[in-house]
Image (cartoon, rainbow, N blue to C red; front, side, top):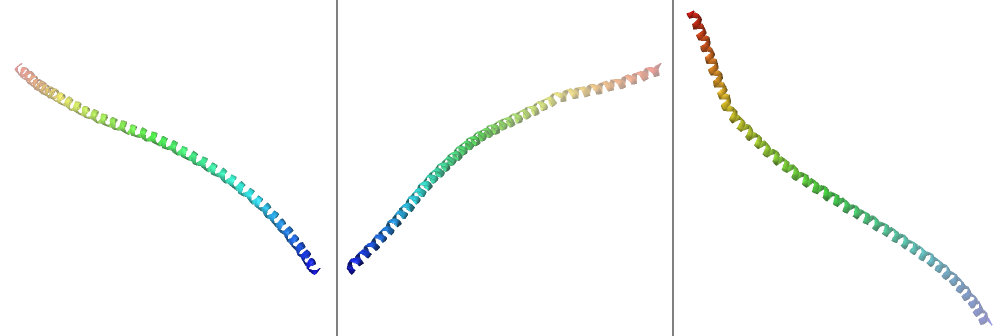
Length: 142
């Protein structure tokens, strides 16, 4: 009898332990499900954040490409403008040389005319003096 009682007590204890373990298993399974849901939700959040980050990177890459394209256009325009400025400088230099050559040519053409005008003035002045001298002589002779 004592063995049967002991076995029954042991059986009750084992059943109680078994119930406790089942309850602990159920609690752990519930905790596992909760953690599993958290992991899934964190995974979804991570995936959304990753996709948002990829979109942001794509936008930034597109903006960078557009910026590079605009920069290339501006550089091309600057190069074109620099070439035009260089051409205009060369044209201005050529025109200045032509102007200087024309000025020199005109001076060469004017010099003989000035000399002739000066000579004519000297002759006219000499003739005036001669005329005044003759007028004095004519007056003296009268």
